[in-house]
Amino acid sequence: NCIRHHPKTDKRHPNHHHFVYNCNPNTKVIAALQPGKEILRYEAMKSFGICFTLGASVWQGKYRGDAFRPPSPQSTVPSRFASPTFKRTKLYSTAARQKRISSLVEWGNENEIKVGGVGVQSMGEESGLGLVATQQVPSGSLVVTVPSKVALSVESPSGGPDDVGVSDLVTDRRAFRDLPWYVQFSLYLYKLDKVSSTKLGIDFRPWLDSLPRQFDTPIHWTNTRQRDELLQYQHMSESVDRQEKSWEEMYQKLQACTTGSSMTWDDFVWGCECARSRAFSGGYTGAPFNPLIYAFTLLLVTAYVGLSLGTLEQAANGAALVFCASVLRDFVLPKFFRVKKYVICPVIDMCNHRSIGTTANVAYEFFGDAYSLSTSLVSNDGEEIYISYGSRSNDQLLQYYGFVEQDNPSDVYIMPPLREWDIAALEKACGGPFAPGRLGKLERAGLLGKSADAPLEIDDDGLESAGNPRGGVVLTREGGIDPAVIQALRALVSSDTEWEAAGEAVGNFAAEVSTENEKRARLAARTAIELELAAKATTIEEDKAILKRGQGSKSGLDPEKRLAIQFRIEKKKLLRDSIDRLR
Image 1 (tube, rainbow, N blue to C red):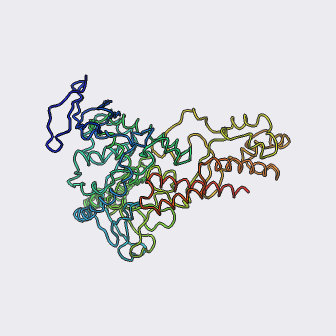
Image 2: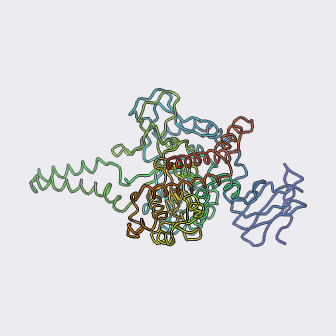
Image 3: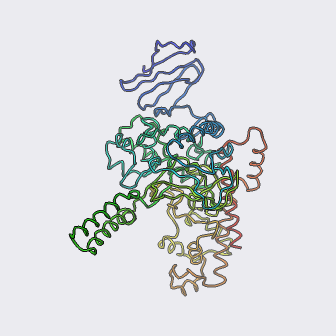
């Protein structure tokens, strides 16, 4: 009853049939259909659920503006984040962006972005774009300078975006500024991309055209169930699930406090992804150096003394007060109130990450009111320039940046909390049952972690995978198993004599109590990690073989499968290293 034929002709496709979905005056869709085929074209307003049926062809889904698209054919549990063109993301987006590099360079020159000794180049289909040395660049060289007027910034928690045009889209400023910084940045980028691409008279379209339009992060993978199978890592799967729920909630909150009802779900996610992967942050949020203030102060001091209005000491005190007020405003108060400024700098944002052997640093030039990229090591012609995004595990790098770093020194593995360990298997490995009441003591000490159904707090900063909301057991690349877990296991495997000698307090097991107890505690930890590794669907050797076959074939591996295999290889390596440490 809601779908009727629409007398619209199509000169290009005369055999297509046109229908109008019009259940109420506020919803409307015009779709071009062909018997037995999928929906080919549509125009739509407002959000609604629809179902078109024509012959044996049925398509059903939920519409959110321009995000309306059929699910991937192989997907059995479709995700609203998934894109049916995902497999071609790198191949097409990188090639398209490379064509726009010349426009970006020209735009940068027009807006006083100074670049010397480096250039933006494609790093291959799997790596996107990066900054590459075009000559030998000595250490300490200033290679990129971006005036602050060309940078985009969001001050959190109170300042918001630095473009007043974004405020025109906001109806409830207090609610908007309470949103996480990357959500505010999403509206900022939407304003530039879809409403007005200018800020302070500068047209940002050439830079916007250089940005990726699709991402390889797990939140976009085509199938939730398949994502879990590919990753083989419970903590990461749970982190992405929390990210999905959090972003959906943030999108609803953003819609409620802005006039941007035309901002689609895809627009929102694109903005969040760009912000999370391209912005850097710092504690300085003050104004740039303004010599006029100090020149005017000097003039007042001269007049004050010259006209005999007071003593030189009094004038000096007044000048010192001006200086102290400036320092207080720009450096002290932002730290006291935990104010941060998140910045995206065109051109500098093309610089990629490496944990070890970074070759450049980003800084704010206070006296020049600009952001700079300077080299910290000698870079030869053709070598890529790397910066560090900070201590990022592969969980964070994959979840928010879409890549995996081999032998990442900051990598971690989050095992399930102690309460979910196979205690019977540990008792068998240790040669006997553990004394009754020990688990209860660990529970009261807060060392067993949270249950799966316990309410979890989500970090507003968006780095859900950086935390450990369920209190899982942490393994690190550099240190192995968390010492607090070894302490808990010492108490768990302790004999009655050892338990009584420790005053029946878990805190007294922070240090080794006996050789036998230490041996049993480490054996229990090693057994748990071995069980975690053995539970994986594939071994490291099998994963490497799959990766090698994919690299050798003409079609190659799907981006999501390639990333997932690289990711789980690194996680299994970390598990093996932790096992070896406990032998």
